[in-house]
Image (cartoon, rainbow, N blue to C red; front, side, top):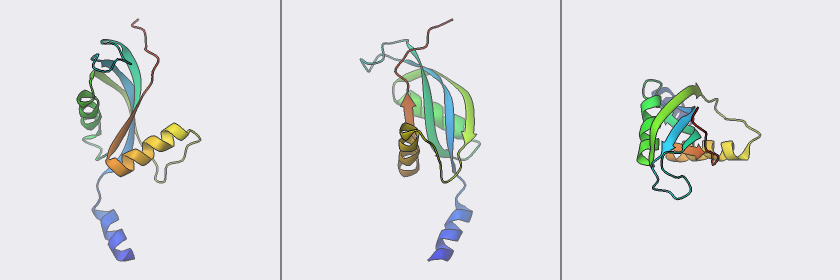
Length: 110
């Protein structure tokens, strides 16, 4: 069976990425009033060429607009962090393909 895992590893082109940025709520969720800007972390499995578009599509499909991706970083496997929330996000992303954290404090417009 180990040869199968090696073959799968060679064929797999997607890695897990973390994207940081901001987005505006569309008001569908009462917790985030329409137009408020919030910071996000999205972890997604993708190839390098499609990671940003995957992040934007994920947020748009979850009632977030005006997505600005500030940085994208490939995550090490296994992922290590002292932050339980980030570890949970990584676990969900590797299990489900993507996961997001939206920070509750709005960012004021400058």
